[in-house]
Image 1 (cartoon, rainbow, N blue to C red):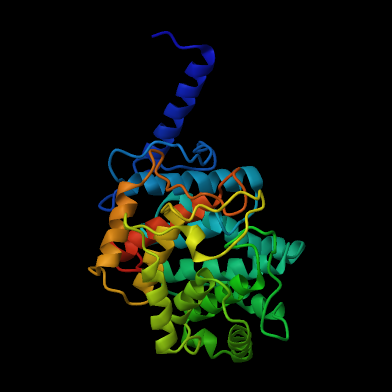
Image 2: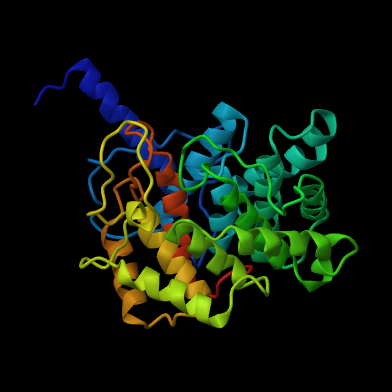
Length: 361
């Protein structure tokens, strides 16, 4: 077989990507052989719906994808987004945080708070809440103690809270993360809950928490995804949902599990697409399955519950060759960046079923 120049270049690029992902992989029983850094990172490529399935499940390949995509985003865009490097700060330490990629992304987040905010200020109020939540979650998953930089972000969060208890969130029509204020409020609730009782009882914080409760009581989640986010936050912050309300959300989530064992993100809401095409409500995907399994585990559903075991089995049999789990964008068929967050949730779901959630190394 004779390859054309373009075919040769394409094959070479794929080999480089695979080599990068392999070098970035880590064993749960050992250290990474070669660290992926900003200097040697290779872009893992576009999120494609027709990417081949992996022959076998590999947590190492999944983590390698997350390392590569987070560092690539950081290197090329020099910013944080909910769907990529903020999500990375949640997922990566649930496997291991003692690697160069995680250190680089964490340091970039710390510099955002301690340097850029001081010099230029945050780009949006949403950046404050997202940073506070990601750093606090990351602290909980690594050292188990609230860092000074996370406390700084948390304290700034209260300065941008509105009188109604809400926050001005990004409304880019990119659900489920950047479409309405409700998402930002649940992130803030999660952040203060994860920060621990000592922080929650600090001067001025309780009034902020009261504001969050006020907003959520007056603005019920319009979709199941919203309600599932509140269910997650309620595991760390008292008063958000009664036991009956939590049980109701769990029942709703269970009811949407598909015959193949997975969940589809598009079924968790009634979002309209920006390109006027219909949502795919028939297929299971990485975000839907990873998010629901993780939230159900956080809500106390046992690891041996049939819904959990079937969901994990779906994840382990639907990983793509690159290590990611594809999820179709709810907005338009172009970049499908929700795949990055979906892969993060898939890793978090598997870790929550096979390791202690939020455990440091």
